[in-house]
Length: 187
Image (cartoon, rainbow, N blue to C red; front, side, top):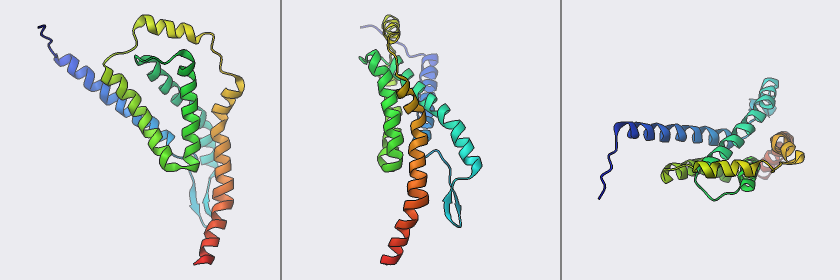
């Protein structure tokens, strides 16, 4: 029977890796699980201030790119059987699904945004390995002929703007006040 020694360096490396991955997964999920447009409570109800709108418009594409990069890199690095097409498609679909649920089902959006980054990181950590170099090179070669259509890219980067506008103007500015008024009359 072969003896295997766990060294201090190995312990420090894995502890740092797990801690760093947990922080990164937490940051990804906390940035995905709620509307990105900040609202301020005014006499007329919740409103978006000009500064918050400008910040939202600037930050959203950066966050979308970071989310896409995070999920793609974790899937690329993990030793799994996901092909090149799924490697591109899964993060795109996940981002759009979570961002839709944020506005129509906040509870499931929170859970999905929380569990997937942490679960993906956990799979990499618990397997204790990353994709072998030759497999990594093969998957990168397989990615070369895959093109994401322009409409898909536009949808990915503009979707949050569209769904936020519908939420803000449809629910916050118009629907919610009418709903509150009807509830007050019914009481």
